[in-house]
Image (cartoon, rainbow, N blue to C red; front, top):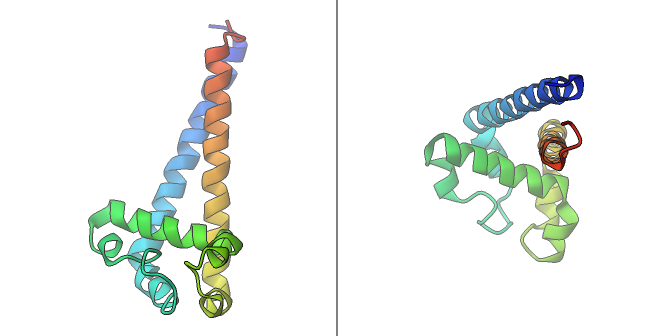
Length: 127
């Protein structure tokens, strides 16, 4: 195996650890603060904080936190389509908002990194 292949392998390990950390943080937020975050969307569409997400185990908690973080990170899209109420977006607690925006961009960065490393591996440049 070439040196470039080893470097890509090590970077892939870092991306895997990053993904694991993002999932662990989402689970932690879902189990400890999911109910409080769900209560902040009283006037918005129920698809953001569906009751099935809250009561369907770890996968549901990840879906709940992922949905809320997506809404908090990109509120214009949801306001434009009538899913999010402007009052709910403005009244969302700032400490939750910062955590969820950082988590959302971390997930996006991890998935982009994963895709780039996969394309680099499949391209044959490293052979």
